[in-house]
Length: 322
Image (cartoon, rainbow, N blue to C red):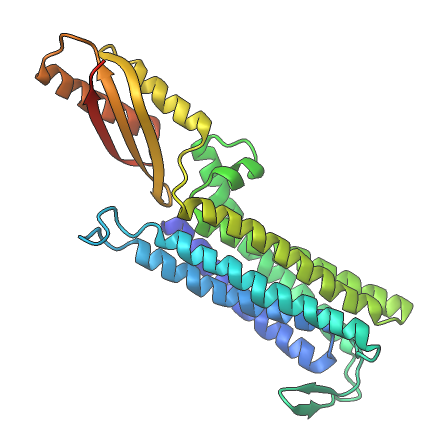
C-alpha cells in the first residue's frame, strides 16, 4: 500500500501544478486544446484525491460489518475515478472541441478576447499565445514524465513480484487498481500533451485553427476510451473476481500434491482488496485418516498455499467425503 500511496501523491502534486499551468495558458490564449487539457488535469487532480480516500479507507481494521476489512474501497473509488475521467475530462473535452469546430468562429489559439465565467478578457498585444501554449505544455510534459516514472516503477515492481511478462498482462491481472489507475492517467496525460502540441504546431504552420480544435476532439475521445477500459477493470474486481485461471491451477496443484488428499470437491478464490485473496476449498481426504491427521494436513496445505501466493490472506478448507 505504501508504494501505491507514493505513486498517487506524486501524481497529485504533478497534476495540481499542471492544471494551474494549463488554466493560465488557456486564459492567455483561448486555445481549444488548452482548455481540453485543463479539464483533463483538473479531473486528474480530483481523481488522485479519490484514490487517496480509497487508500485510507482500505487500511481500516476489519469489524463486525466488514469482517474481511475495507480493501474493496480502493476498487470503488478507482471506479469513481474512471467515471469522472469519462464524464468530466473526456466528455467536456470532446464537447468543447466539437463546438469550436462547428461554430466556425472559434479562436482556436488566437490572441483575440475570450469569455470565461462571463468575464471578457483580452490578452496583452505583446503576448505571443502560441509560445505561451508551448511553454505550458512542455512544462506539463516534464511534470507528467516524473509522475509516470513513479507509477511505472511501482508497476514494474509488481510485475517482477508476480512474474508478469508484459504491461498488458499486468493490466488484466493486477488487483492494485490504484497504481493501475495512476499509471493509466499519467500515460494518457502524456499522450494528450503530445496531441495538443501537434495540434498547435499544425495550426501555426497552416494558419488554420481547425487543427487545434481537432486535437481537443481527439483528446476527448482518447480519455473516454481509456476511462471505459478502467471502468471495466474495476468492475471485475468489485463484482468479486477470482484469481487468473493459471494461478488458480497452480494453487489446485499444491493441494492435490499433498499425500493425504484424494480429490478437490470445490475450489474458489476471490479478491477482497488489492493484493488480498481469500481461498476456499472443499477437499476429500483419503480414507482411514484420523481427525488429528486431517487437521495437520489442512494446516500444511494452508501454509503451502500462502507460500505459493503471497497475496493469500485467508484460507478456508472444509473436509469432505471421498
